[in-house]
Length: 220
Image (cartoon, rainbow, N blue to C red; front, side, top):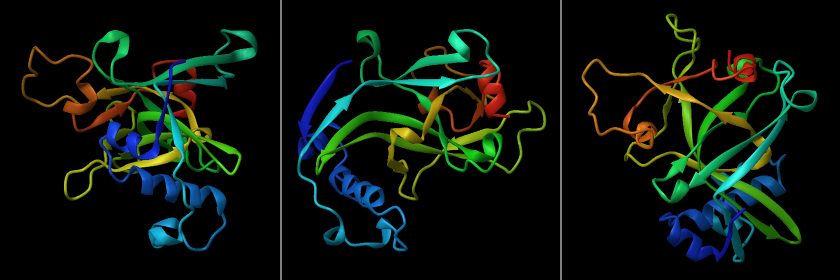
């Protein structure tokens, strides 16, 4: 696995994300005080833990999980790569989709969120390592799956100013990779469109639960 270690401010420059240092401090507060009645979003930057160290950047991660519905592998164990790289196989960027565990008390997609990983990174604070991911949130459309396909529909989230709704999460919240299918419009699609453009061009997507047995089990 390729690792790049950058000072925090340089990482912000490389990611073209000036708010990255403050996002790290908000994330760190939520990790250190998970039971706080005051969320980090309501605190000033001066009330958040300070961090000025280096961050290690990674362009992929491995998800290992048990899929009882899939008998392949040893005791139904599966492993898959999740990529977030600006140049996949020396070519175009690739930023994969993932399922996130949001509410273990709910079944299926009601207990999951969908997000796109923009980068994996980690940092050390007071001797403890925090493995993280910078993600672009996707939100569910409607309270039920699509009637015609039986698939849930999601869309990327954006603020009113058009900027993507991004966040930092702990990698432990990632369940596995997700696969999306565009909700195709009625008009023709340009011939030059490739798989690398799909997640950036289309505005709504079906969550593909038919990609494998385990996805069918958790994304129904």
